Length: 230
Image (cartoon, rainbow, N blue to C red; front, side, top):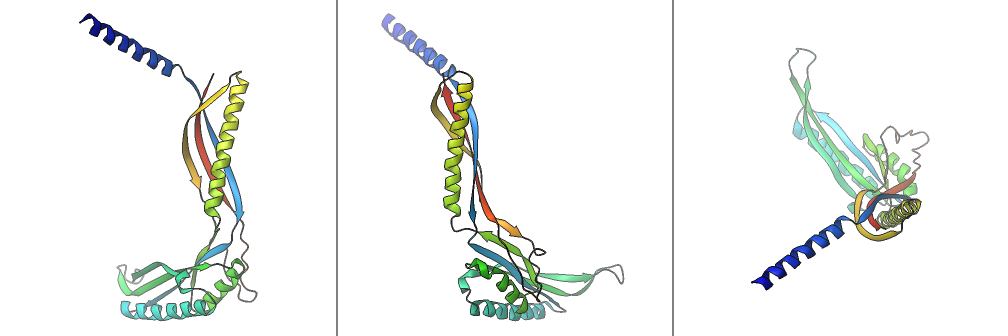
């Protein structure tokens, strides 16, 4: 009985010792941030056809005919069918509120918006002009992308980790301490860069053509790191 009691007391004392040791570990918590920039090598243009007619079926049929002509013009220009996808489609009733003060149904509006992947960046402006001359009457903008996005973000993470360690070492040194082991890492924030132009920025001047000038894309990463120090 006494032996069992002694073993229990020793176990409790050991637990207390371990807890006190854990509680006395001093830590440094820092944030590392880095950004890597790469050039865009492809673009997605958003163009569409919007029209109205007294009857929904008529509006839809007219829209479908124009969209098919638009797709044909784009594929003939070298765009793969798989790179032309529907991003938005709607059929909405159109009401007139001005004449009687009550809503009067005057027709239906149909809008079909296409996302067109442009894999040769220098063709972006010409393809916008082609779309607008082939039946498109809306252009919601251009978004630039990079095939190196994943690699650029990975590099940003690596640089953020290095920046976090550098800051931790600096803090420890400034306080006359020695940086210890890494206790934990959290990825707080990441952003895949893109440059988007609104329709006003890509409005076509048919006399001279649309000029699109992409900027570099920024990929950012932020990590929080916790180090022990002594």
